[in-house]
Length: 619
Image 1 (cartoon, one colour):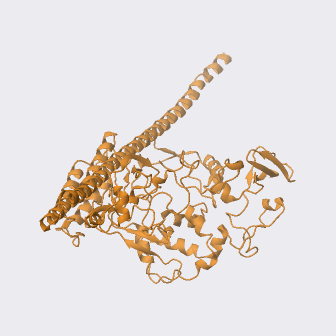
Image 2: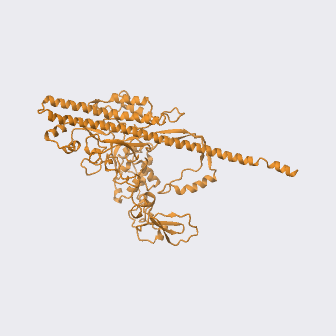
Image 3: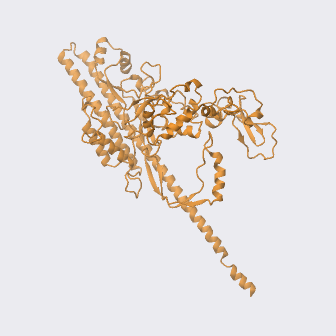
């Protein structure tokens, strides 16, 4: 009887265990469902962005080629008239001038209408790939691009209090642009907007020094992210650079480009074309009579955004924003691209940017307690991950949240950085040189392709100044960085704090100390801190970038001897002291934090660590 009672008391224990397992599996299934939804949304958005950018870029290519064809018609008409009409009288000259005027009006019309066709094509491509004109399937909120485009239309409307184009001529290069331009924009708006385009809108450009216009620099300073390309470079400037008003900033306000501000082609009309330019463009030697006639034509040429070099060909153009802009070889074989860039690719000009976002509804209302690892000095913060994981486990791994939606994608009206896809019309002259080398536009564009989104700067549709632009405008009037006299614009205090931090020589030397001279120390010294920079005890020590990188080998026992031992490991030699080790490359040089963490590339000639600088690579 006792045995039967005991057996009855134990029945149902497996059921309890099974219920617990089922609950865990259910939670896991919900997590996996949300993960699948996020991945699916991300893939759909990326596909839509790329399709939209390619569609817009193709219409930019067609528009440029059509403008180039009209340039050739101008040339052919003028050259033929020299042969066909022996004596050109006033009437004939008037006919030539009238033809030039008509063809120029056609080119101006294309510079407005072609990009807006690109704008409409981008929207349709995104919608064909499943992107909504609303923030989410269940949301009644239109995408924020609607608000920006409506603001832009207000500035184009003479009856609006926000009208901002009163000083622009009614006719631009013989084309009455405003009414048809606004009508096309409204038509596209009425069809629904799914993606945000790029163009030339109110802002500042040609910032000097250019690194002040880098949004990421300021957060890099505040977080001591020494691997940031601009921070990495400027902390190495000689000490005398930081004397006086080193923050003196110069820039140009963006002006109306006299063409579409959305998906801008980058054209201008000029009659000042040299003989060498005309002969190269037309591939023939010109007589004096033909040259004079051709020089009187109003050619459609590439504007200042296209050429890589200034007019004299001796220095890089400040307006240029294409690949290799700062003279460093970001885009080399083995770094981000399969092969080196063709030389014909080194030009700026027209690009097509597209970004979109979507809010997706989550099934789960639970989240991990483990937050994003905090950034350690000069690193991504991975060093803190284990500690944070342990903390999450001690305080329950899962927490509830009221958030039921998650944003996937990018929205430039709210997000700091642009994050869409970029496409570019590609082409080359007959000798393989970039298209703007011909100065006048020719029908040489043969393809459109995706490029890394950081290879050429794009300004997303945004009618108002950004916070950074407001700050730089304010900074241009500041004479004392420590006591500026007036407060920076609202929301820009962090930029000022960052520049004040950069002004401190202690901060700069903690990253890179120009007073440091590498000495032939015993390798055991690099496992300690005595050789490192300290403003009080070692002012001539090594900054973080110059310090020797130290790793930890988890496979080595804690009790391992601190005696120095060396082990060969492919392109490097590991030098151990207990669990810790440093690296020596095949040339015998010890590997620094800068080489290992910021920009190291094993392999290459002799398998050495390369100093090639890393650039962004999102495609």
